[in-house]
Length: 344
Picture 1 (cartoon, rainbow, N blue to C red):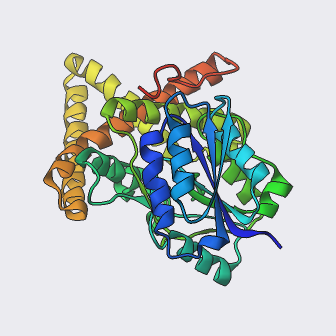
Picture 2 (cartoon, rainbow, N blue to C red):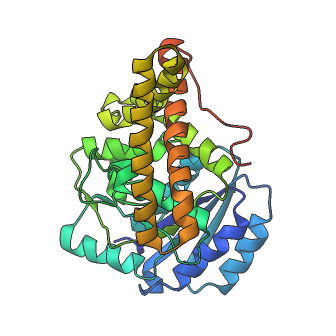
């Protein structure tokens, strides 16, 4: 019999300003405080994370354990957390998230009724988030921009895999399949793929919501999505089942549009093809504007949503293409994308 039902594992890297809101959201849970623990794994932070966490430990009504490690990335940090966890289920949540007060209660209910081996839930935004954060949320969760692959829609154009911003596994999964891989980006997706391939009972728990602050500038968002495009190629070289037709669309659209744009002055047919493509894109962006306005009731977020959605498509398309060129064509052993300035 495990000491806790849930061990919540949170990797931290220079997020002292955001970890406070996350811990406060754990204090606000409707779930019993004695049935969960929180493991904060500092991945070599250079800010005042340790000081902030020390204060949080003293003021919180549940068990918090804090570990400091060298900077290796979120995967190794989560792996270390799993090696120290005392819960029946290991939960993963990002440090820039806020858990809904019913988060643990909803997960416990799903466990009681469906007895899953692994599960994942959606992310959303709070009204207090900035217009840009809401626009990013729309771009990353809408069926129009993701095909439902991130678990926010009953309709899906690609398989659903739990992601580490809101994910849980039974401790026996860790004991049987081992830990997450060493990839800096996408290690949770590869881990989820292994879990699904093992025949485990994996479910989506749409009622268990976390609120994700995400990136705070378009530059940071572009770098993040570019690296995700690269990661898709890196993951494919590990397990080609991770690559699905939907994942080609941003790259095909990005490269195809740019090629047609460059060739359009040289032939009327190509120019009209470019006009048609631009008109179709404008129509979709208009739908995105009104859909975002309906969801958030925020005109600033709605105006930003088409810009963010375009940024997402181009960033992923460029990253996917760069990863394909570097890893598949040139056969480089390693390529990650943005590294040194990823967090700036």
